[in-house]
Length: 165
Image (cartoon, helix red, strand yellow):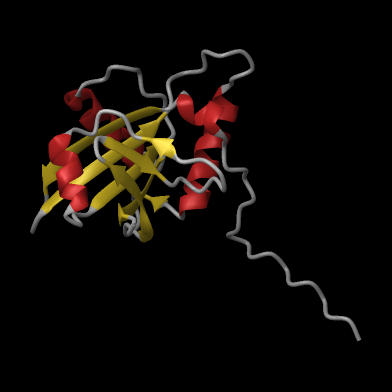
């Protein structure tokens, strides 16, 4: 007697985790804010509009959703899940384990205060936004962007921390 293969879970996705070429084109912003009971560090990952040969709105969304799936992020309208310790901090460098088996994503411009918060074990809210983020957007523009993508269910979130050495 042979066993029937298990039917795939209806919620499973098999999108590929993008490689370093895609990740290098992402827009990354980080900041710290006061939460209800403590400080929270934030990371927002998105992508500018298509600008490279072969890049389309659909291919960008597919790459971002590959990251979302690999990190088990959930829509911003749901409760923010804990997605495990995904941050690597080495002096002034921070990298995110975004689910690729061989590569991590460098998080530029985190700043001393942000890194100190993470090194002390502080929580980090990781967000991937599907709508284009123009490079150089300031914190006011980012706040408007987050409100818009969260309301449209085009933002995915998870809580993470530093990985132990």
